[in-house]
Image (cartoon, rainbow, N blue to C red; front, side, top):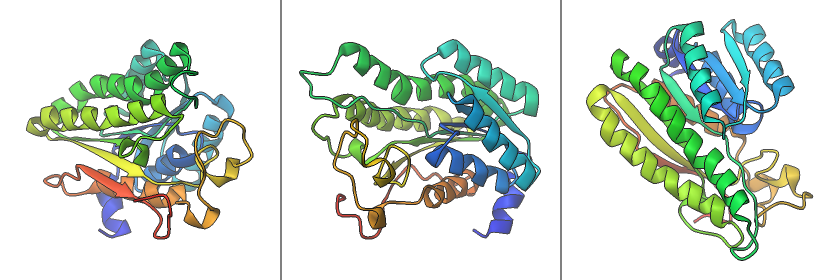
Length: 256
């Protein structure tokens, strides 16, 4: 699918992207706007969100709605969906790109930390999907992309909450696919390998809270590459469903 074709398909559509202040979420929001979509940006960092919104509007001419919130706040998520429909009149694409982790052994991890990771990584995607489903069903179309991790395919030590939340995204996505297909709603789960993001790979290698051994920079995916795939999924022919995909650098040592 050419860039021009993608723009023709997504022109005038509206997307909601979580984690949009940085990393993959930011790259995805920009990519969708470049393809012609208006975008709602969800994340906690108000200043960063507004900066991304300015970049989108100045570079693409598309509308960007920055809505700072805590993804663990269900009421805020529902309000964000309502605000998107009020601003753009529709919701065609939902990308759950945000993620968090509290590393620690099973014995050492606090239940409150477990709950926080599950709330952001799994409950928020469910709550947002639940909120956008009626709008997509009425339109007879829609695409939901849940960004998981290769940690969804193989559990790691000191990452029980993270792995559990990501494994859960697969089940959620499969259920969304089964319920959405009769209404033209597609759902896809992506499993990226190491990405060059502020907490996912080497750019934060000196942080104390890194849960896993990190890949070298040459073995880290640029977020824009994964974002390009997400844009393609959103613009794919309506009769095509990409149910899931593992994406990793060609020379990544950690997968498979």
